[in-house]
Amino acid sequence: MHEHIQQRIQSIIQNVEQLPSLPDVVSKIINMVNDPDVSFKHVADEIAKDQAITANILKLCNSAYFSKGKEISSIDRAIVILGLKEVKDIVVIATTKSVLNKVIVGYDLARGELWKHGVAVAMLAKKIATECNQKTIADIAFTGGIIHDVGKTVLALFVQSTFKDILNTVTEKSITFQEAEKVVMGFDHQQIGEQVAIKWKFPMVLQSIVRYHHEPMNAPDDHKMIVSIVHVANTLCLMAGIGIGSDGLYHELNYDAIKLLSLKDSELEKLFADIPELMMKAKDIL
Amino acid sequence: MDNLLNIGVAQFTVAENPVIMRTILGSCVGICVYERNKKIGGLAHILLPKNPGNANPEKYADTAIPMLIQQMLKKGCKREFMTAKIAGGASMFKFKSTTTLANIGENNVEATRQALAKFSIPIVAEDIGGSAGRIIDFFLEDGRLKVKASGDEKIYYKV
Image 1 (cartoon, rainbow over the protein chains, first blue to last red):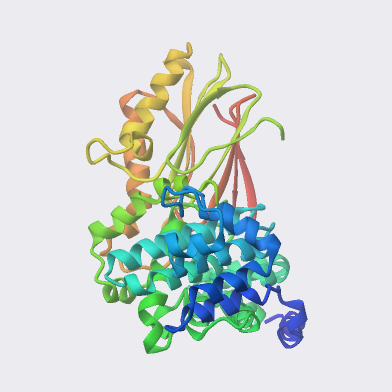
Image 2: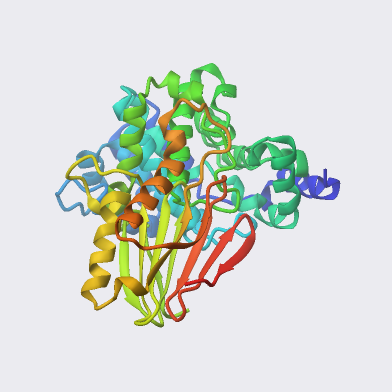
């Protein structure tokens, strides 16, 4: 254990200003969408307060992945045509890109790779949720997919200086990369990500996705299903090499998560095979 | 690097010196075929071993590799001057061995070997298996292949 590194990470967590920030509008919108009594107008007004975000959101509404074929020129129209949940996910994409679209040293991810990974996991998680009769939470799976690795943006510098030790710990103890992060640095990227989600005032379910995406069976019972969805999506995207870094495939594909989702081998293979087409659709989001 | 071409998952490209082709691999296999006289190279990034029928041919080893080789032959490459290097085919570190998904890496490598053997193209270097992700750079000036995995770099020069 590198104690000085553990202390430095501890101080970053305690001094939340050092964690990445996000405009308040994001958590406001996420919580509004969860409120069954919310008015469309109220949500549209909240988004429209931020001119810079609004322009970007309208562009995303008309992208290949989100567009329903009709030109969208206002937030009001976007909510009517795409629905509240879809617009919420577009707000998340428009605002988190600057946090995630970075060079991630340590994990050896070139600029854009972590962002591409998040978008891929989001799209695949949404698809899995829809196909596993969990359509009502498909949008949460999408949001969770985007942000699940946000902890890597903070931990990267420390992984860079301890990488050899982490990899040696993986082989010596036969544990996963994320478990070895904890052994060597005292924290793993899931725990740091959870702190970021808390700072961003994201709901518990999103905190769980970030905190347990490599160990879905340790998530609170209420969240096991959705965490499993993101876990499977994450595994498939890594196997396809999308946003795979120096931690490679030194992770676990959790069998209980597959069982919980009742996914057959043939269905898993189909999801894996569909990844290239999904990425084509996402071209103008990336 | 101005001449860098990024090849995405389930894509293939044929190009000539001085291009460098790059792709990033997990369980997928990157097949780098080089024609040493013409300094023409082709890189295919396959996702799965066998095409179930009329699916996108670029995704599968058994359909992408013949397409890649045909395209090189069309550009005037001679089969006797062509060799291959392959990389990728990693597996999850921990998994239940009964899931077929877990064996995709190995199956991809096997299907790649078979497809290359059909054209009698020898594999002169391979960097496969394990659980590492790999970033590979294929240099068409001399056919060398640089593999970056788990923080280390290796270069395979043989063509």
